[in-house]
Length: 208
Image (cartoon, rainbow, N blue to C red; front, side, top):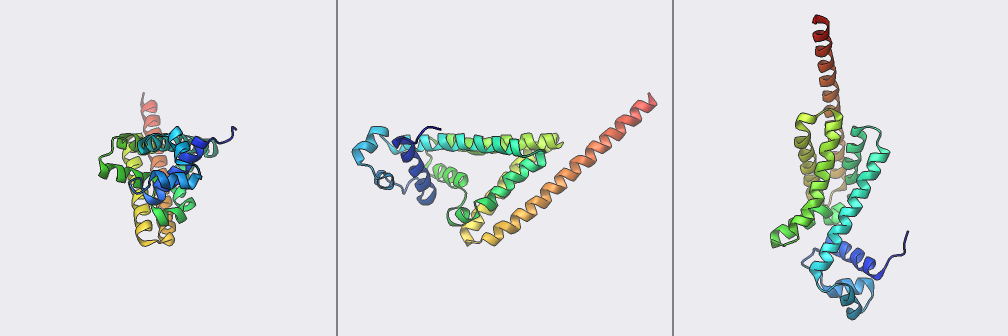
């Protein structure tokens, strides 16, 4: 693993500040001070805040892909992998309580600003949507896989928004428990459908 460069440190600091303060309310000076470099050194790496935002989004996309790959490796079954997505709310509940969801807050702010990089930031949601849709398909819910993926995304975003509004970690735990139960019902429904389809197929074969 290579050592972090000054550019890496700038992106890392900007990522945290955009999350905690918002993109619009974070200045060049804020980022330079966080990294403890001169303005001249800063401008050597980035000429505008939009350039930094683009780099932050690319790093978030890369990190999200790595996280999804890890969930693929660790989760034996699709329901295990989907559960990893749900439980990220528990893992990050302290930050979510203070600042909301890093994906939702950034996409929401850029949408309000009608920022040209809004579409790039939205790719973070698309990444999760595509991955969840594939997991629900593997679970045996191909017909409504995208609907289930969007429902879970929407639920998680709602939980993050309300946890941030009310600063309530207990609410996050309660909602995660309910999402776990919902996932269990989806899994059981998929198993029943598979059993019914198998039984129907066997009956057809016997008749023929």
